Image (cartoon, rainbow, N blue to C red; front, top):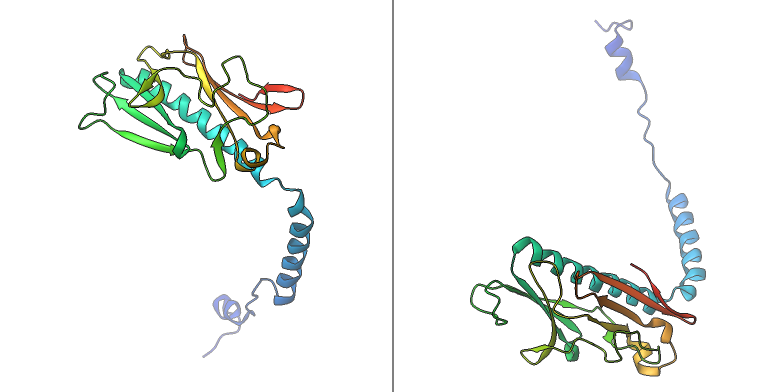
Length: 200
């Protein structure tokens, strides 16, 4: 016989409450987000965002190459394929400047809409060329990080947006990555109307 005083019976008779959003509430939120995006979108500078991101990625790539040379105790060579807008990182285990069987080489692309160059931004002390390293390996400009952490020479490279490269009207899109010779330390910089500023 059914016992109303049974706690299990009372629990089974409680109504099930389902919590959630109604369709009207969800549509209202979507409309509000759509309006906010419509107002904000014209103010977002996608090219500037991309070039900032690329500078950070390139700077981090150079830092990683330098640390990898110290950790693995052999040369790490970074070559610059300017026509392809990419870096080639070679783990030169026998330090002979040649990609031998078993040695790993990887590529890092500058990023969508990013190219080597500085357009009308003034040059930094490291030089005027898009890539200021003077040594070449396999026909490409290159810098070598040694197992003590030092670099083969002081230098660096400039990157900018494709739009700046096309019209020369946006020198503020220019970024620079600089490598010190003695320590192999990498820093990156951005150009503003009042000059170059160190970011990291």
